[in-house]
Image 1 (cartoon, one colour):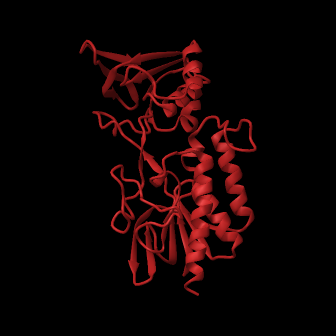
Image 2 (cartoon, rainbow, N blue to C red):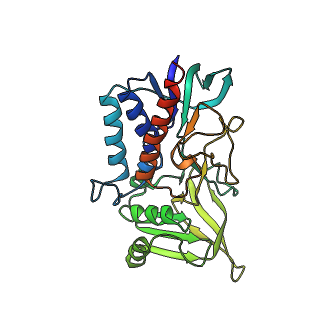
Image 3 (cartoon, rainbow, N blue to C red):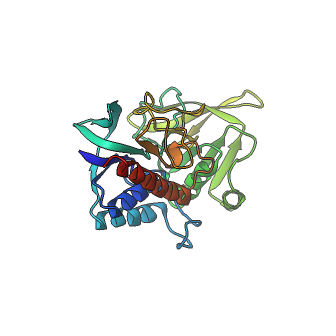
Length: 302
């Protein structure tokens, strides 16, 4: 029996683990991968104490911190959380665990295009992580799908390796920060196609090309590519608690100012919640808040 099981290994989850660990609570952190979305950021320039640091490096520092204070963790997938009287059961791919409280910090998962060929070539040219897989496309041609900051970051990361980077944007202009837009515009390797819709991908053993439609002219074209990076947004990872907690219209977990959900004993933090701003430093702060709220909850039970 754990005092608290934390689901998610991003900034919110790891911050919560540190705060509960320092309170001498019996804590277990469950995650599929440490770092979450933060680990997929090429450069972080707005985290206090670091003028510039890569997402993977910042995530590694977070992980070193939780390991230094002895937080127990397991790499696994959480299937479902259920409640029996005042105890929570967490079913993973391997076992069933029990806790008196839950902190959901599971973040978001990448959205798919749902186009012909996407599933077939996932991992065979199609990726959701430019930092992870960018080096595999040295001197090759790649395309980034999307128009927000994540798409701009991916393109800027990929230009370090690829010979040519295309960006296919559904909208007339980018939705990202001006500094990122300027960097993309100044790049000699990046070419942008606006108001186009990706309609399919094709290949043999690996990805070979992409089909798209110009939304202004309805003209259909193809691009020969070696890799495609999908950056069209993220959706909250809430399937395992959707029957226990109240969600908003976006599928995010509703929380109060103390990170309590609609289910007593379940707290939530970070990008999986309905807080307005999604930033690494905010997620870390929310994780700390959730941990302190969970600790106060636990103190009323003992």
